[in-house]
Length: 104
Image (cartoon, rainbow, N blue to C red; front, side, top):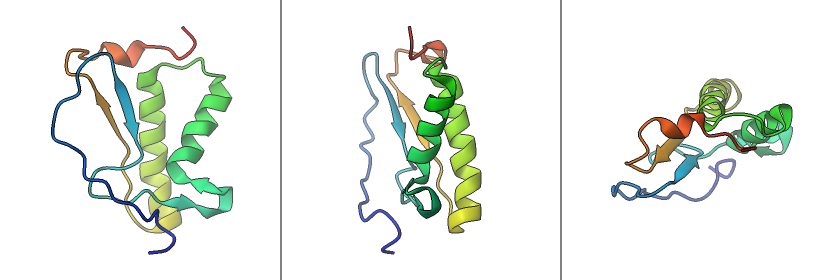
């Protein structure tokens, strides 16, 4: 239990409004787990890794998919528990946010 982040936040059920994209490290029922070998949380490690590799030249959709895929797989191997990152967006954005680039 100490290895897990000691906080649990139950997300609100309200839909997001406006031009907003929120990357969450886990679902509302999961803990955000550590990557002790890398001295980060597992979500933070893969988020920063991809940002560094791409030098920020990546779409939010690609970043979301990379982090979600890596964290979901690696946390089973490293922590023997599930952690599934979530990306929540404003309801009016549809799929357009996926093409937004960090460097634009």
